[in-house]
Length: 164
Image (cartoon, rainbow, N blue to C red; front, top):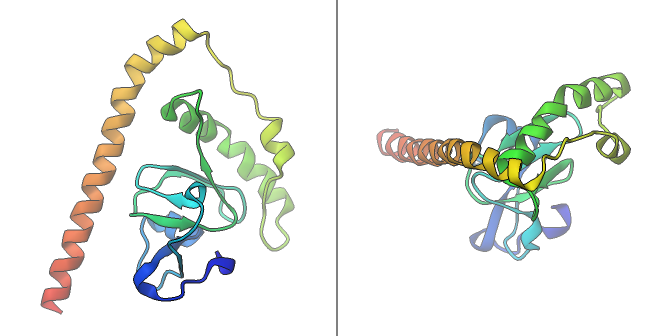
């Protein structure tokens, strides 16, 4: 996002970096970027974010809209449901962390080849549909709870500002 510095902060977004992903929200110390960026690098609440360098993690973004920084991927699929993508990425996370730890001189990371060598078992359409009927409501509820927590955190910040 260094290439997309905001011209003025009124039309800017906070930048989602590993620190923000770890804490689950952006704050006043978060860098800013222009809001005029490609939609593929705009992150919304609930998006699946995968950190492939430094601190390797996979999380649903719990903060508000932000610009995606380097070392992070927004994981999406036009073919498979979000819960399926999230769970398979999470399944491989420990292996990715082990690979990165073995390379850590300054900041451990994985390569694209590590991703390509990771196998996901894809059920046939009928079975995937049955799984989706079970998993989608659970995953949707998870995202709903994330959004509720975000609203509560915003309310907390507003109230704290009034008292301090």
